[in-house]
Length: 155
Image (tube, rainbow, N blue to C red):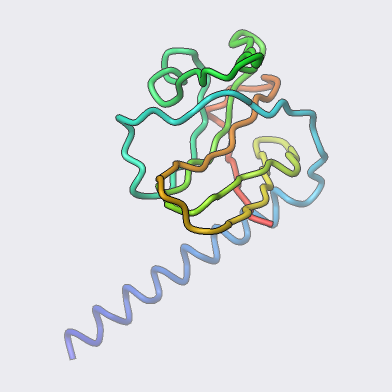
């Protein structure tokens, strides 16, 4: 009987949490408008970062950004410049995989206190190497980035 009560309590707590997150997303979606964003190119996820699970990041300074990302050496291509006084970064990092995987930013919408980041995930064939798929975009600062709720939506 005690076991049943614990399982029922945990189930109800999970359902309530899901309902709260769903209703928060529904409020964020209502009245949200597309905003300009810059896709960050020629970066990679550093190999000293734990990439065993998905990570969703809001980064508002260069030091924190450099702790996660490095500059990719690409012939003829420079990394996208970030003006940290005027911009901040949101990023999604997926677990390391041996499949070709592209994460493509599709749209960023904003409502007061909320940002909705939509991205497309394309998975391909197995490869002989491992990669850490990610997408990162720079957004203009309108408010304190750490006070914004960010929703990551896979299309």
